[in-house]
Image (cartoon, one colour):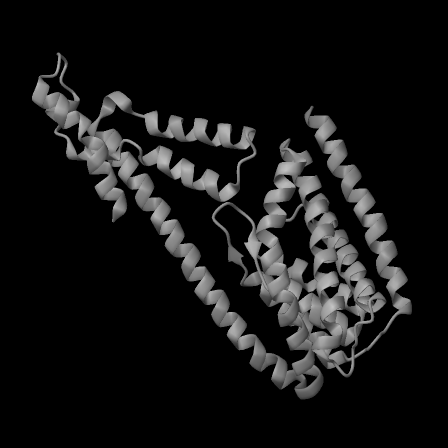
Length: 320
């Protein structure tokens, strides 16, 4: 089974490389603007976008790479834009382990998606000199959708094969999360291109500053969320220390809840909430004395009433 998965990963990587490099070479016949200073600037921006990308709690990263792709397609044309975008691969190496298959796939995927997105932008009549958003809105939207669908499909395919996951479920989760991000970053990339065309390098750098601030804000959000998850885990651990009889029970309930949710193909955000609820469902026992929790004999009527009250205590804790 493992050998079959490995062969499938190699096959997907090989096909992506063939199509990606072929499509990239084909785009050399389209608009080409060899602006050396701009190429250097955007190459550096690509590297920085990945070096300072935000790590997500469940793995993966968020960066402004797609906005840079849109801007580079408009300014330099799809051939150079795809080539410049490889700076993101270099930046990604700062916080990931180098693996030849993964590196080859990522390079091929970037060439394929950026080249195809560039072709779509120009096929639908997108402009590259005198930009007018009302005129370029349709090309921009179609470009973002094509980029997202190709990128998400190929990434999902190789991840699903490598991890033995269901393609459809993984694809829906990826697209559902990424669609708002891509649709928001596309106008941002267009704005970056417009500012660069009018104001040059100083204007582009000036626009990047708010993006860095946005990255800082989002990173703060991720850290806050991680801290929240740590508190949840600490409370569950405190409960286990108090009631050794049910040690590991909450983790098992959370594990079974996750398996059921995935089997039923329930939304990721609902699944995450349910897993947290499963870990915390007995937290009210913290408010019940150990003598009652660990009493070896039968409970009295009053003790039983106290035990039944732990759900209310748990609700009060979680409300805060």
